[in-house]
Image (cartoon, rainbow, N blue to C red; front, side, top):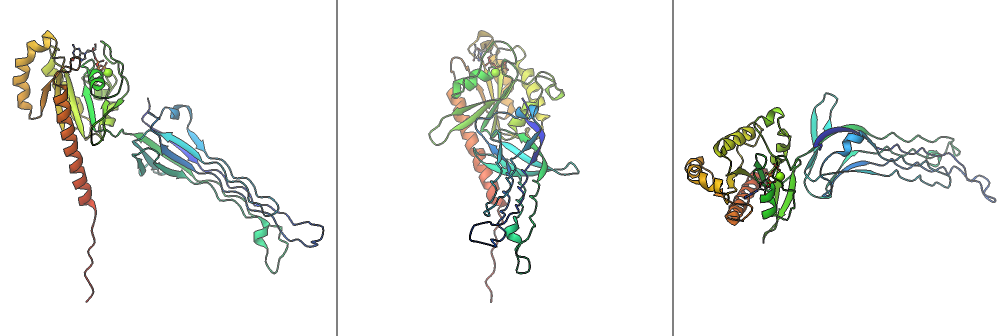
Length: 350
Ligand SMILES: Nc1nc2c(ncn2[C@@H]2O[C@H](COP(=O)(O)OP(=O)(O)OP(=O)(O)O)[C@@H](O)[C@H]2O)c(=O)[nH]1
Ligand SMILES: [Mg+2]
C-alpha cells in the first residue's frame, strides 16, 4: 500500500490556430476564416470514497491531459482537450514540489468529490481570422497552441477519522471494530491479520462516527519492525485513540508501555485524547490479571475499560465514553478555528 508519492502532471497542449480563406461561389474575396485551436485539457486531483490508497502511482508516474484539436475553416474552433482526473482517497493532501524540493500545500481533499487543479492545459492558438486588420485583410498568419503546464506534485494520504484503534497484533482490534461498526474485517488468531488500515462507520443519532483499525504495532515499529509504524500517519488526524490491550496476555502491563513508546515516537500523537481498553476479559487469563491490572492502570489518569469484544461486555460503555470524548474534541477544534478567524472592526470615520 502506498500512502505517499510523487508524480509528474502535465496539462494538454493547446491546438494550433488555422489558416484558411472563405471560398464561395458569389463571394469573390471571402477573407480569412481560419479558427482558433482548442485549449488543452487540465489535470485535476479528485477525492473519491472508492479509492483507498495510492497504489496506482507504482505503475504510472506521469499523467498528461488530452491535447486540444487544431482550428479549422469557417472559423471553427478546435475541440478542447479532455481533462484528466486522478482519483485519490478522501484525506489526501496535495503538495506542489518546487525546484528546490520544497513541498507547498495546494489542497487538503477532505470531502468526497472535492478537487484541485494541478496542471492547466495550454491555450489554443489563434486562427488567421483573428489577424485581419484594415491594412492586411488577408493574413497568412496563425499562432501555435501553447504547451500545458508541467508540475511535480506530491500526494499524501492521511485518513480523517474520529477514532483510531491501536494495539499490538492479535489484541482484538478487528473484533472490536466489527463489534462497534458496520465494518467486516478479517479476524484470525495470528498476528498481522490486518495489514492495512480498515475503516468502519459507527452509526449514531446525530451523526456517524468514523472508526479505523490501525495495523498492529510491535516494539521497534518505528525502526521498521513488524509492519512498521508507517500506518500511524492515519492516526495523525483522528480525534481519539483507543489503546487496545489483550487482557489475557501475561505481559499486559509491558504491552501498554510498548504501545505508548511506539506512539510517543510518532510526531503529534503523544497528546491526543485517549482511552485504554483492556480486551478478552471473558477469558480465565483475563480474569486472573484483573486485580493487578486495575491497580496499575488506575494511575494512568485516562479512562480505562475492561471489555470483551467477543461477548460485548462493557463495549457499550466504552463506545459511549469514546463518543463523548470525540464530541468534546470536535468542539475544541471549532473554538480553535473560530479563534483563528481575524475580525476587522473598522472605526467609524469622524
Ligand atoms: N476470548 C476472546 N477472544 C477475542 C476477543 N477479541 C478478539 N479475540 C480473538 O483474538 C484473536 C485476534 O483477534 P483480531 O480481532 O483478529 O485481532 P487484531 O488485533 O485485529 O489482530 P491483527 O490484525 O492480526 O493485528 C481472534 O482469534 C479473536 O477471535 C475477546 O474479547 N475475547
Ligand atoms: Mg486485525
